[in-house]
Structure formats: structure tokens, C-alpha cells
Image (cartoon, rainbow, N blue to C red; front, side):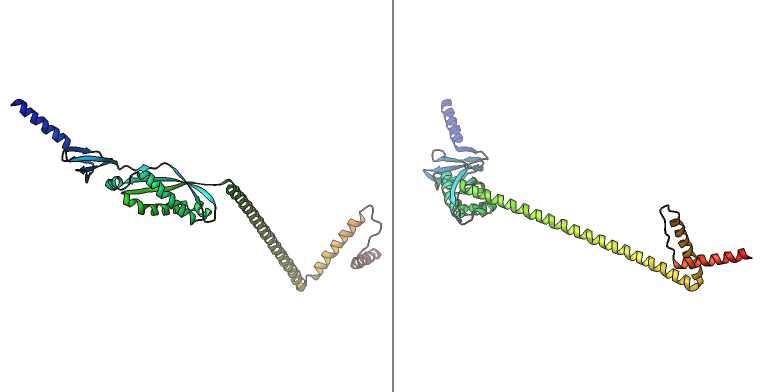
Length: 287
């Protein structure tokens, strides 16, 4: 009796062991019953029917990356290039990924090759090089319609590099050098233009200041002449004449003291002054 009980307990424990399934967080398990798909087991503890149910496949649902793929393409302007792509995806429906496609990685690579060539064929080389993000989004959107049937989702499609042939690369380098030369000439011309504008502004400022100084000097001279005229009108003519004659006399004295002076030209009014002074002196002597 004891042996029978132990045997029954062993069988029960074995059945329970076969029934309990613990699925890890990173996987989904596919259960088949009598050869047909039954259900998908998510993370956690599950119970299956022993001898009827079996685990047909364990699908990893972590994000995965395909090997970097180089796709040869021809652009709209007939330039042959090679586009290197990085593709990341993850499985969202393990049953579709297992039962609807045999080799999912190869299938994605095949679909991407056709879509990339079609997309690149509608774009110029300059657009491919300058708008990589737009092209990546376009490729990702085109592929997504297909991959949804396989129970996967593309998390990212990135264009890593665009390689061109040697002749096109040489032509692009010549174009780049020409563009750099043009920019240098434009900057040099703009610098000369700015220098000329600054020089013109400096000359204009100098002329304005000189004109301002001349105006102030003219105003000062006019004020001086006006002051002298008012003094003359107020009876100061005799004093002015006396100052003028004194200045003339000092000038004659200075000229006469020079060793090389032979002939001295005297103003007529100074001679008249000297004559009047001489006559006055003679009168004083005769008295």
C-alpha cells in the first residue's frame, strides 16, 4: 500500500512539474495543442495540459539589430551609390513571427533592399546626402506596412553612410573646392566694401569737422570785425590809428636793425607821421 501511494504521489508531482511553466520577462512561449497553435504565454507562471500541450517555440521579444547592410542604388540623377543601413526591430506578436515567416531577418533584408532602391531612385544625390533623416523615415514607413503582417515593429531605420564611386567623388570634391573659393571671394569683396564704407565715413566726418571749425573761425573773425567797427563808430578811430602807426614804426625799426638791410620802404602814412613829428621837434628847438 505504501508503495502504491508513493507511486501515485510521484506521478502527481511529475504531472504538476509538466503542467507548470515559468516564462521569463524577455520571452514569449508558443503553445501547441495536438499539433495546432493554442495560445501565447507571456511572462509569469502558467499551467498547460500535459501530454496534450507542448511548447512549440520560445520567442525572444527584446529589441534586436540586423547586421549593417549595404544596398547598391541609383539616384534620380543617375549616380550609383551604396547606402549602409542600420535596422532595429522587436517582435510584438510571437505567433505571427513564428508561423507566418520562415526566416524573419532574411525577409526584412530582402524587403528593405527593394524599398531602399525605390526610395533612392526618386531622390537626387544632394537630397540623399542632406536629408538622411527624411529618407530614413520614408523607408521605415514603407517597411512598416509589410512587417506588421509578421508581428514585428521596426524601432529604428538609420542611414549610416552614403558611398559614391571614385569619379563622382572627384567631381564632388571639385565642386566643393569651387564653392569654397567662391565664398572666399565673396567674403573678401564684402570686407573691401566695408573698409571702403568706413573710409568714406571717416572722410565725411573729417570734412564735417573741418567745415565746423571753419564756421566757428569765421564767426569769431566776424565777431572781431564787428567789435572793431563798433569801437570805431564810438570814437575810437584815433586810438586805432595810433596803434597801427606804432606797429608800423616797430616793424621799420626791426627791418633797419638787420645787417643786410640797404633800402627800407616806408608806408606813406608813416612818413607823414614822421614829418609831422619832425616839424614839431624843430619848432621846439627854435623856441
